[in-house]
Image (tube, rainbow, N blue to C red):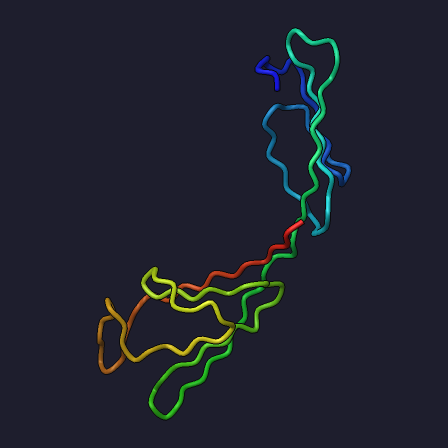
Length: 132
């Protein structure tokens, strides 16, 4: 591996897009599998060096949820989100479930009681990733 600085760089992103800067920012408009290639001419070298990687651009997640309340006022939330491979439920930044459905407990450390209801911050993280 050379520590010589690049004199020139050229990127191809696999969808027709290119860049001539060393550290480009690039956005894909469609999901798919792309081959990204970097070609650089390094200082003190007479030939181009190449690096190629395959990347997968996933479809964006589309959040969608259903909810129901049982007779004990337990709230069940179910992710019916599109393009997700994993769902994580957090309460007050504590991971409480990795299942598609989540039943909210009636109380949780850090919750505040307000007019008979327990209030807290619920955060849902959806993943849409594939391993090559």
